Length: 465
Image 1 (cartoon, helix red, strand yellow):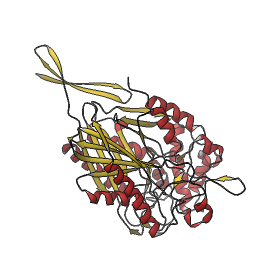
Image 2 (cartoon, rainbow, N blue to C red):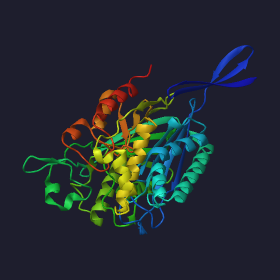
Image 3 (cartoon, helix red, strand yellow):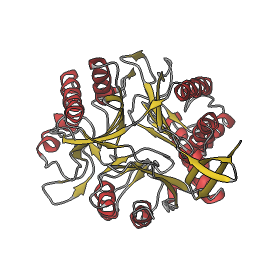
Image 4 (cartoon, rainbow, N blue to C red):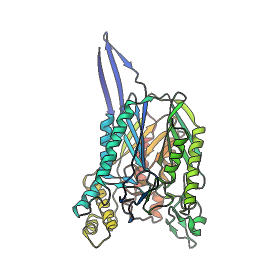
């Protein structure tokens, strides 16, 4: 008897079948679907830069930053899903995470889905930008290379152990519930009818921002869960809001979404809860948050309550025969803004009279410029179809308007959108936001992103043949 592995690959959709050849007959052997989960500490050291450009570096640890993930095993090459309490992972660093975790899992890099939660009291990782900063004497100013390597190495080890300890999966669960009085859109219209996007994370102390309408949000907390018969192994929750109550004071924290996740984990330690941020580039807690300690606790409770409601209200279906994985290339154009062109950013990077933070931002822009203009590297946009629901990973700070667009292409099958995948883009506004004049220093994509994303979503979420 001989065993052969036959792998058929069309884009990123693979089918792996084990064959047993005996007596001249080929018999397909079922491979039991399994899941392994893992978690490691990912807290930055004291003195580390936060959010890439915050002037106050980490001075104390309020609560630790964490990495949570799971690996799906079965008749296809493994799928790895990671959510980390960091601000962003960008460009060549994002590629490195995919490549190294894929090597451990013996799968394709495009089958590794990494997302950041985007807390601001947390690091931005971009090796291309740090290379440029090294050249002008700003070593470790964006991030600490040794710290990053240590976290990634521990993630590799944790993934390896999760594969060894993987348990059978028999059912997939889905639930959703409304989150009240947390999210509000940054966009407001002032008394003169002018549009601005000034409502930040803790704007609730200002009556103008507190009294303005909520605006466009997606109020649903969505949860996909993985079960071994009647035992829940992993819950993957996602909700669309910037995850900060307050930041920039040197106090490292996973903030209200991380605190809610940790509270849920303590409730039943046999279940591994994971939280991911949805498409929330233009959504904050600003209407309902004044930046106080009390407000952080209130926001934590609301997120916790929604996740707990989904735990209690879950509906389950038998696990599908395949994980329904697709990954399609997304081509987004680099910004046409004059300050973001190569020569302008190089001048800022080299100018010692500029603040370190402005030079870091220039290096980040140059790293993204190199990716798009020189290396011509697209973004991988993956989805997993679990039958009962679908998960889609969006790039960077995609705006919340992309969530109903994705759902419109998915029909009756719920979509769980996740933001902050590959983050070279910074913000990814919709056409409406560009038309309203949205403009930020953290914006490296050109108008027209919506049409390109819609085109990919239409193919990504089309019914399987």
